[in-house]
Amino acid sequence: MARCCLARTVAVVSLTVTLSAVAVRYPSCQVFHPLLHPFRQLAYRISCPSMLSGYHPNENVHNKARTSPYPGSNVERSKVPTDKVDWLVEWEDYKPVEYTASSVLAGPTWADPQIRNSAKNFSPKFNEKDGQVERRSLLGLYEVENGRPRNPGGRTGLVGRGLLGRWGPNHAADPILTRWKRDSRGNKIIHPISGKNILQFVAIKRKDCGEWAIPGGMVDPGEIINATLKREFSEEALNSLQKSRVEKEKVEKQMNRLFNQEHFVVYKGYVDDPRNTDNAWIETEAVNYHDEPGEMMDNLLLEAGDDAGKVKWVDINEKLKLYANHGDFIKLVAEKWGAHWNEDPHTDCHSA
Image (cartoon, rainbow, N blue to C red; front, side, top):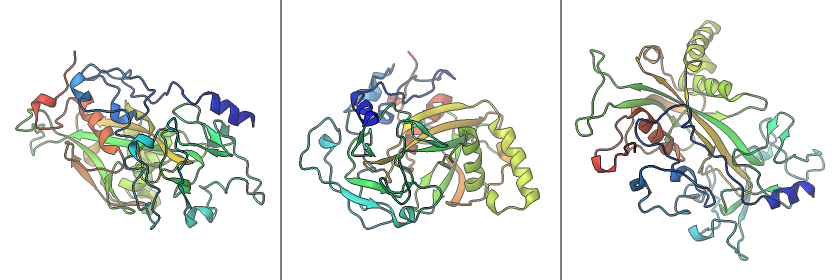
């Protein structure tokens, strides 16, 4: 198959997982963060060598995408040692478990049919824009084997789609809304040890796993990223789906004002998500909308909705335990604004 052959010729690609440092200059380090670039072929630039201490190329690859049981099931993945994650490492005895959730096989509008399903006449165009469905990866071209796309991040111990609707990349968007923590007089609160201002972001507690996370979700077919960011935040952090027409109009005005302001693209690329499989994976664009004066976001009436069980403003620091690798995104936001992150001054990153 020509498409398959083309994908094979570019097994090692110049990945375009990017931290958009070009938009805004970091007050601390400008860095292609190794935790967010789990592919050994990727070259990164960093001006603070101390952040690399103890880092090994595959150490942070698929930590969460290799966990068992698979979310929402009792399915155990085949165990994949760290040194066998990379597809370039030969492993003849690799026997991943096959699993696709019944909710996906039921054929909802957001999910693909099974590949080679003659009844559905389904033949996806991988590495292309397939009608309204975006099957191109932010990482470049990915391989296709036996009609199935192959996760560019490596082995996960499970084939099929699990809970993910699309074969190949499942595109998501994560809005990170931040403000400075302030006292009753409106003054920024400084951390007593680091001496830096404390930054806050809107976090939700996911219903499916109980972990705190950035409010976000999947990009609908044909939808632009900005629309997804706004929609997901409105649904999960403001409960817009349950509001009256008048209330929705008010929320829409707030969202337009908030999401039309200057913003910072924190990250574009692969996500180490526990739902990933060898044939389906999540890629995201995380975008930071920051309210410097603290005027717009103070008027937001947070109310959990849709996939969120709870929602609140959370102080940003290194002790946060967040879903997938959301903590890495939050750390980059803290670095960008020069905010408090940890209490050890020796690990702070300073511009060269």
